Image (cartoon, rainbow, N blue to C red; front, side, top):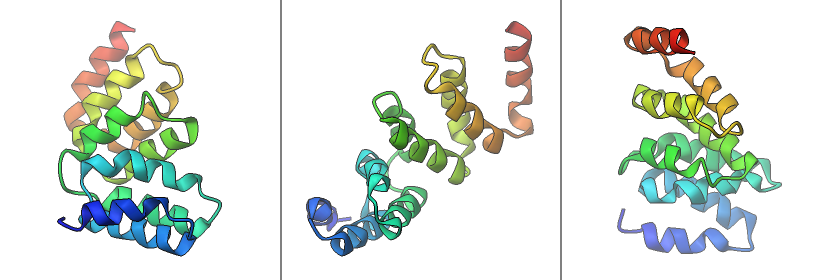
Length: 138
């Protein structure tokens, strides 16, 4: 973790190989603060760089990563939102369900499809009552 500032500083490198190494390293040394940075990385034309950033979003474990993923959604571009929702569902963190339900019910139609997709992968029996109550109220 002490390497995080130096690794983050290299994220703006002109060299794709350096950036790919940064994205790989952030999965290990990063924390919730690097979520927006990693969400932007898949916009790269280099598929290996994209995959490295996507993998790091799944591996992050320092700080409240789930809250950071959810918080980044409203200001994210459509491609960043895709990555954020992919990470939310791919991490398998059912703690994201309340936040995703809020987005699915919320007023931003740009966030609703991604929220529903992520919910489809994360909802389990513990959330059944909440979902039934919500659908009955709609």
